Image (cartoon, rainbow, N blue to C red; front, top):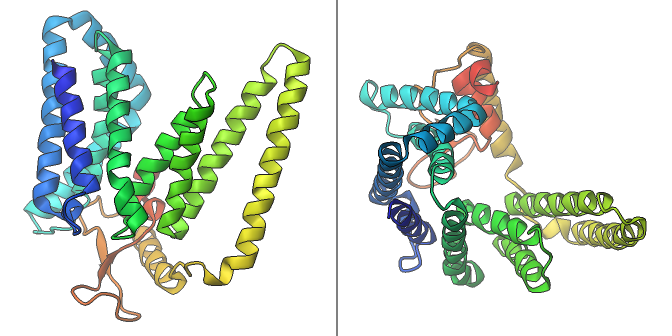
Length: 317
């Protein structure tokens, strides 16, 4: 039952993320975030408590395994959450890093929930189905171009890569996976171009590794003669397309980014060990030119620099 509640919570979170019935900023709304956190942490916490009570040996074995793999991320999330709570409670900073810290905790909690489950494979299949349903729900919005935001890209590309790299090859599944990766290009943003290239490089690397591990030398030769030329043709096509249409591609707001990067870097140099302790705002004032009508306080657009500036070397490590 508890696994079913987590799957349902994942569906609700996906529905809010896709925002299919309201062409606005539902994903930015405090109400939507509150629902996601309440459903997410509530169902995960309830599941873990139930597993600890019913199957304590299984639960604590899963706990030790997850902690051994994810303790750095857990400690970093606690660092971020404590600093962000201080920023909100003491300095009344609304735009803190609290969402980042809470988001980090979802991964180890999901891992703990799956590892302590009686049916982890079925649990994972239902979760995967919910993620695919999220992507399909958001697809009409992406194709129509009503609105585009980065979160959708980080839903489509991983699902596509997962389908392409399934252990047992299937033509329809591979085609569906490539379609999920390719649909990211509809957003026409530099971020998604890089994400698509990264996904394809991962797929090529895994395919080559699988081919090289085959015991039959003829199969290795044939596989390499298929994967390598196809990959080279694809890279050549991507390079020629970029060279031909690069003037019409998004400029990437270089001046904006360099200004924000410099602010973050100087903040890190001022306190290189622990930064601001995540007690500052997650947005900073941009003064080169007017960007938005309602605010000039904008994000750095660099996760590594945000870690350095607000958590110093401690957070970066």
